[in-house]
Amino acid sequence: MTGNWLGAAALSLSIAGAAVAEPTYKLMTFSDLADWENDDHQAALTTFVETCGDMDDPEWSGICQVAKTALDARAFFEAFFQPVMVEDGEPMLFTGYFEPELRGAPNRGGEFQHPIYRLPDDYVQGQPYLTRREIEEMGALSGQGLEIAWLADPVDLFFLQVQGSGRIRFPDGGGIRVGYGGKNGQEYSSVGRELIARGTYTEHQVSAQVIRNWVADNPAEGKELLWVNKSYVFFREVNEVPADKGPLGAMNRSITTGRSIAVDPAFTKLGTPIWIEKEGAAPIHRLMVAQDTGSAIKGAQRADIFFGTGDMAGRKAGQIKDGGRMITLLPIQMAYAMLPETIE
Image 1 (cartoon, rainbow, N blue to C red):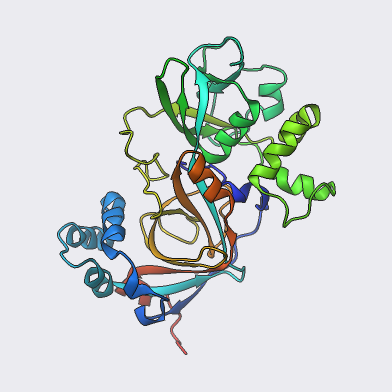
Image 2 (cartoon, rainbow, N blue to C red):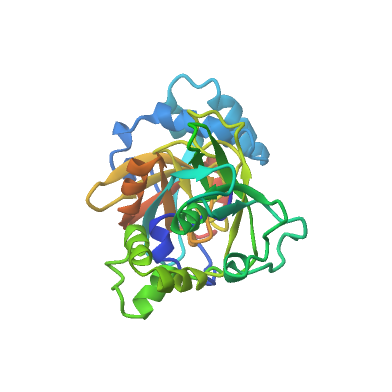
């Protein structure tokens, strides 16, 4: 998380370099939100309070102070917020992400041959750095003492970078937690799109699990496939986060299973409450909080839902590739200020 993970289903769907369209805004009412009255508003309020104190706008700061002592969560949201549909002409797409738990070791040895690297000393934010191929095939970072831990499966390492955080379990029963530390400034390329372009799969067939299986079944070609994506994520240890808390998101606060989403900050301010209406086999109508971002999350109607930690969460997240809509809850005066002078 913390800024540049690429949610599980998003791995196969993102199109890097898409232009940012001018947004449009439409006022809505709470009665327009499907099943609004049936949600657990207190759960949403608890999640909102986790990060609202970090929102630097005075209007948000005032609302946050009220939120901390609100006795009726639904009444709080209805009194202080205005639902606004923000669109950019692109259809809604929901995907999912999670925090993986992976087998690893603190030192290299045996099956554990694939390093998780921290930021190199010569790394400069915003400047292109070594590509994935140069780091993995050519060993450009070897011998610099940058290894945080070692994994047994190179595909686990790739997908750890996709998610942006994870828990590493050591053979002795111990372990560490890692979070996003930075990225190499190289362009992200979707390996799912590459498989579609080759005719290996259709768009509806590609998923994170399908990619994982294909790489495992085709080891040599699999390495080349992963190297198509030049982007590379570095990590840092985040053991200060309690085990019962979610990983750190882009606001450097723990995110909440089933209540946190990743959004495009070009359209949505981090910390904002967002009502989602996800369609598909398992519909979700729920008040979420925008607490994370991701390289693949681009557009006004684009969100990644955080499903939690571990394999079960990963399976749930990997199944999400659905339409629907999301509605932003903005402070009332702020909502009206964003509208054009003439409102139909």
